[in-house]
Image (cartoon, rainbow, N blue to C red; front, side, top):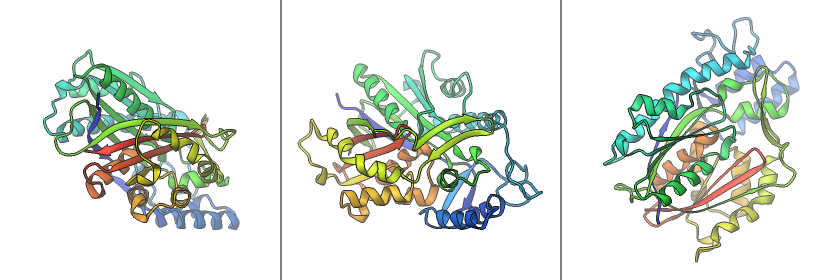
Length: 364
């Protein structure tokens, strides 16, 4: 049975900052040593990012509610509890707002048709979980099935899509809502470690969602073909996400692009096992833009044309890395700006493990 992404919606917080502005702020507050200031300048200037969004409103001096950048010139270190409280307030609002937007934007869809809600996030926790808030605030049927995928990182949209596809294959009447939301900026750390500086230079806040069903989209979407996943050997220390006393600590090693490059072929080839198609026949690549270097490695490894990675680079430039939510931004860009009917798309994301998840989609 064919299963489709019927619609994609995205949402970002109202606050946004230019990357060069953030670069200077970090040099001012974190760069206590000349060498650190130099590293920050280089990382931010070569990031491929122009702007990022955040729920934090005090990145500018004299912000309304100082949270990180205090007037005494020091970078604040809020407790994990304080950060999670902030996450809870904003995440509840954004999960519900995006869910409502997703239903309203999808042609011919009623909220009464939603049978499953899958939520995804790794940047905070609360219970009842986000799907409960969506069911309650949208007035969905109380028997709507709810699932939450937590702490899986940037690749988590793929397990969510796999779940949605399985639900639809087992029940032709299923209509599954998948929403990914990440508020990465609330975990900014006062650290001069290079791994922490890299994380601070790319991560941002945003949310995205899709409706998945066995009904072909009325105004264009994707058919979900096949998924594959793998884990790079001996790499779990190079990308990790742990809970500390002052927020979640993200490790993003400088070796990540090389690790991904060396494991790409073995990760991608299983996708073509049941298809009369070759890698070189893929029209577009929807790659999670974890960083500019990752996109550069993939483009070089597979000799891709510039336009084949345009969507990923554009999303990186405009939004940065929003963890699990980012891949749907990329697929939305392709859907609206580049892909034509029957074009093949190879989607891919990377996360802790180091895990590589990928999928084949066809524009319909």
